[in-house]
Image (cartoon, rainbow, N blue to C red; front, side):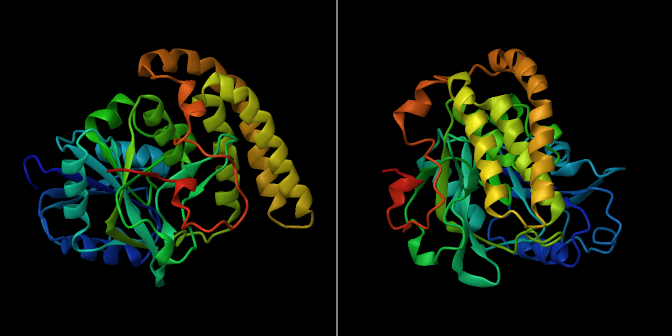
Length: 338
């Protein structure tokens, strides 16, 4: 492995099947060699890691004795790095040849940025957006910007977005460690949004890089509406509000998010998903007192900047929106940059 590569790319694998090898093969074709790759095996049982062929010496494997989740495994993969930047990459995400070069160019243009968000496209339909960065509502709901919209609606210039999607997300290493990385209690899902929220509150911002293209399958292991995903997504949204929302917003977001989830359940009364959504909501609410207690210790240590004004100035957090608005109106979820 390189002595001090510019980027460490962390891939968390858990029963990832054949896509993991494809992911590594695409990485090996990257047109710059200033990177290293750490694959963290979360005790997979399908042979996805034991059967892979590492492309070259840039790649290494770390083994976890148990499945510790995406958040903790990503932190494990980041340990000891001397690289300037850390990237997370899902096993079902396939990079384009110039993606890392484009990220480095963006950092050169915006050296004060703390996060990088590549353009994620649907691996099965390259004309459909998978995500242009994560979007966070002041009411606690989050989603991938532009998801399932046509590629023609994606911004074609550098923009500021809320945070990158964990499917392929870049973080400046010193900031990643200063923020204590991902919260391991989330296990997986929403941990990328919550880290983005903490970094935003620390005064950092995220650059969307339109020419750094990643092709993403999405939920390739479990499927889109798996009970595990539903439970953790709704539970962790409550975790995020209780742990990291500024207090003035927390008192609004927590009841509004709870009522909106109850409305979702009632609106789809006979859906088989409701049990898992409700279970996640309840577990989140039960854990809220713990997060409220712990945040008074953590908030002071992180040294948050302007924790209240960022929500009133606009540009960082947008109102919750369930409509299919035309994303050509890019100021809905992005902030243009010169």
